[in-house]
Image (cartoon, rainbow, N blue to C red; front, side, top):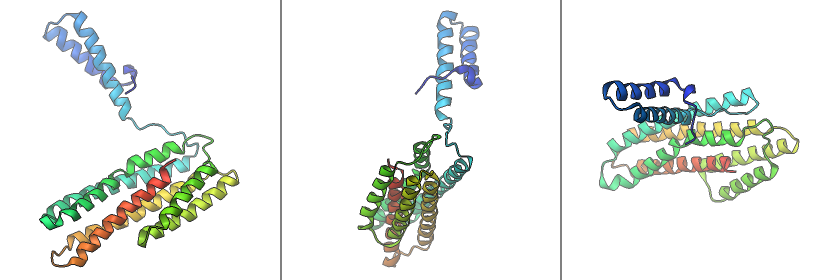
Length: 240
């Protein structure tokens, strides 16, 4: 935690002043003891406040910045819905033979909860006035996606295929000396949108869950696995 200037955070200064007032006037501690303590409270408090502040990005592209903010808001809403799904699953899947399914759903929800911080990571990876993706970096991402494509199926494979095509487009933009960040954010938004659809399908299946219907059990397992795969696809997009 980096130290911050308390004067930039009035609440921290107020907290230090209160400590000084209570210590000297009410508790009758000597000034020599309370003054350093009050200063310490102000500095620590301001540093904590500063650490919680959203960091300012330097994307040099207002439109791109707005798109990232919109994607992060969508990710936060999705994380909230994932938490609701987790709560519902705990109330419905209470049998001993349902623990594996519950664990799978909880793991998928955990991955969705990571979305906002992953978007922050992508945002810092692409910030800067001259932040053009290196062709080698994009090619590595494409190679990773192609490898995973060979082992994927269903909706996750379709999403990976779209991601591969988009990365190829990014490489073309980079070769032309153009900023490929816009396409990168489009990929991000697509994965969030697809994840939202899967999460909604999981919730629908869960609310109509029938202990005697093994097909619903299997469908929920499949959906939770695909949701995890979607988040892994996002990892491929973000990892440098």
